[in-house]
Amino acid sequence: MKVVVNVDGGARGNPGPAAIAAVVQDSGGGVLEERGKKIGRATNNVAEYKALLLGIERAAALGARELELVGDSELIVKQVKGEYKVKDATMRELHAEVKRALRGFDSWSIRHVRREHNREADRLVNEALDG
Image (cartoon, helix red, strand yellow):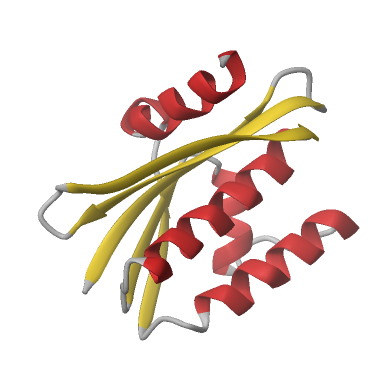
């Protein structure tokens, strides 16, 4: 089964109160699951990586073998693709965790979209932060 997972993470204050979200869809665009949750105090970039991990975890739990990740953080997308180096020690650990988690899939891809094309995940982050 192939799924598309939109992910988003955000922090108010950077660092500040942070939340993550993932929206898992089947290949036809039907929503299989959506999750948003607070993660405590973090930076935006840490929240984005933790959102990726949430999306990967949920896809695996639903039995996906093929995964397309979609996010609005160009930095994180390019780091996962190997186009940018990961210099920060905390982010290096999260990056390595993401790469390990992706090994469980037959195939995966990741792409960047502008924020307006990631509305549902963004909404869930804000709801978690406001809740």
